[in-house]
Amino acid sequence: MDLLQIAKHVADHQKNGQEMDKISLSHPNMNVEHAYEIQKLSMDQAINNGDRLIGWKMGLTSKAKQLSVGVEEAIYGRLTSSMELTEPTLHIGNLIHPRVEPEFAFILNKELKGDQITVRDVWMATECIFPAIEVIDSRYRNFSFTLEDVVADNASSSKFILGNQAFSPYFTSWDKVGVSMARNGETVQSGVGAAVLDHPVKSIVELVKMLDREGFSVKPGMVVLAGGITEAINVYNGDVIEVHYDQLGTLKLYVE
Ligand code: 0L1
Ligand code: MG
Image (cartoon, rainbow, N blue to C red):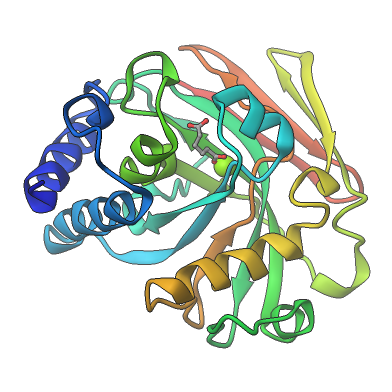
C-alpha cells in the first residue's frame, strides 16, 4: 500500500471539495495506524502548500455519534489555519455536504504530552475555553465510511469558528452547560457538555494519550475542539444557524 499516494489523493479531494470512494474499498487491509499516517501525510501536503497546523480536534466523542456512524471509539484530526473562519459566514461553494455541530474549544498555554496525562494537567495548561461551531464535510459519499476511512480523511474536518468571548476554565461546569442549535429560528438539536466523554476535559486527556502513541503532543497556543455536544446537522445555502450556550452566549453562522 503506497500511503503517500493515497494521502495525495485525499489531499486533492479535500482541497477541491470533491467526493471520493472509500479508501477501504480499494485497500481493505488498511488499519487504523495506516489511516493516521495517511491523515498526517495528506495534511503535510496542505502544510507544505502554506497552511499551518494550529491544533487538533476530537471526533466521535459521544456514544450517539459513534452509533450513528457505526464505530466504537473516538478519533482525532488536525486543524489548520485555513479551516478557521474569522467571520461568521460559511461559504459552501467548495464544500460537499457540510454539517455543523456545537463544540467547546480549549486553548492551551503549555505543552501537553505523554500517556500519564491527567485531568489536573489539562486544567493547569488551559488558558481559556471558547464556545465554538465545527463544520464537518466528509469527502465520502453520504458520510458513509469505516473507522479507517474517516481517520484517513482527517476526521471529516472542514472549518470551525470560535465565539468572540473567551471564558476562564474555572467558573463553569463545562459538563453541565446546556446547548441548543437552531436552523432558521427552529430549534433542531439540544444537548449538554457531558455528551463529550462525560466531560469535555476528558476529551483533551484522551487526545493527548492518542497523540502520544504517534509521538505527537499538543503545543502551547494550540486550539483543541473537544467534540460535538449534539448531533451534527446538514446546512444549506441561505441557512442561519444559531447556537445558544447557557450562560455563555450565542454563536451565529450565515451559510452562503
Ligand atoms: O467531529 C466529529 O465528531 C466528526 C468525526 C467524523 C465523523 C463524521 O464525519 O460524522
Ligand atoms: Mg466535531
